[in-house]
Amino acid sequence: MKFTLTRSTAVNLSLVFFAFVLPISKALSNAALALAITLWIVEGDWKRKYDILRRCKPFVVFVLFLGWLALSMLWSETLTGGFWSSHYRSAPEFFLRNYLFNFMIVPILLTSLRKSYISYVVSAFLSAMFLSELFSWGIFLGWIHYKDIPPSDPSPFMHHSLYSIFLAVTIFLLAEKFRKLQRNAYRVFVALFMLSALINLFLNGGRLGQIAFFVALVVYTTVRYRTGCRAVLFAVVFGMGIFGTAYKASPIFHQRVDLAFDSIRKWGQGDYATSWGIRAKTIEISTEILKEHPMLGVGMGDARRVFKALAWEKTHNGFFNMLRHLHNGYLQIWMDAGLVGLFLFAMLMFTLFKMRLPEGYRNFLIAFLTVYLVGFVGEPLFVNRQPFMLFGLFVAMGMWYDVRRKSEEER
Image 1 (tube, rainbow, N blue to C red):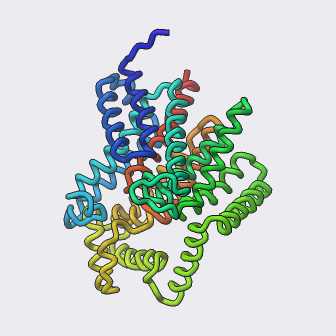
Image 2: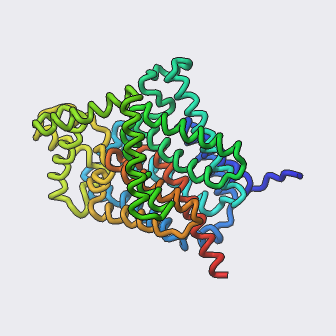
Image 3: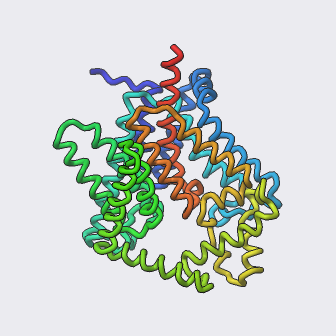
């Protein structure tokens, strides 16, 4: 069969490349996305693309949400005092490089992905996660020495909190892949891969993904098997069994759980000098600020400066000057863009949950969105490039299915 490299094929190959490098390298994923954007522009066909985008409600709401974040710069007293200021010079630069640039994976995939390439994109991502796991296991076993990463926390290519989110997503993606496979050899391999990812999730120190996985497991089991209370009970018992086994078998998980309970105990005694105590104090300080700016927040360009000033006034603790974000995605959106921003974010999630999708992808996407909704409690995932790109990749694929189904129904 003769292979012809058309503009459309080039775009699709760039999407496969992007999915592969996303879990491995921030620099390569940026380069891959830049390549995809360039090829997408060269591809043209703007009338068709515009028609697809305007008819996709989740895409429109996503644009409105990001647009409101951009508008929040208008009521910021300065454009150089946001929570991004340790890495970017100004709020416009942060918005363009972190939000707008990373968001571009959504319109590219939504308008240019061909059905025959969907499996390639998913397989590329899973292949990269498999490679990442090999590195992680190698570090854990002491066979690989990479960037001074300790065997006690083997997260090779990103911070352990973010890696745990990637692992949780991978487990649910593999679960749906396992269900579709017919050949036993493939099913055995996928089952072992899934087991490896599950063990790996509890070998690293990312509590965020572990908790998100547990909640998403309950939701996924309920949606997948539709047996009501029995499914919920099974998922809870199964999840507790996983956590109990991990607590006994994984030293890092055991340590992190004990540390969490110790932090909560000290917080209850008024000691905020712990991981959980700092988060609690951050919420307390932020809430006081937001009482004066509930609807609009203080603006993406000024939030860190305002927070630091009040934190110093209340605590005289210089630690809060080092916070890169508020350790809570919902609080971060509220601080940056007010209740209006939170409402638009809620609308985005609502429209994503309401999409009409093939059953297998619907099950996965519900678990995927649950992982992010829980993950947002402990981390503003959208301000980190790799989890924001990951979100864009899989929600855009859901949008692709939704738009195509509507088009078929209209014919």
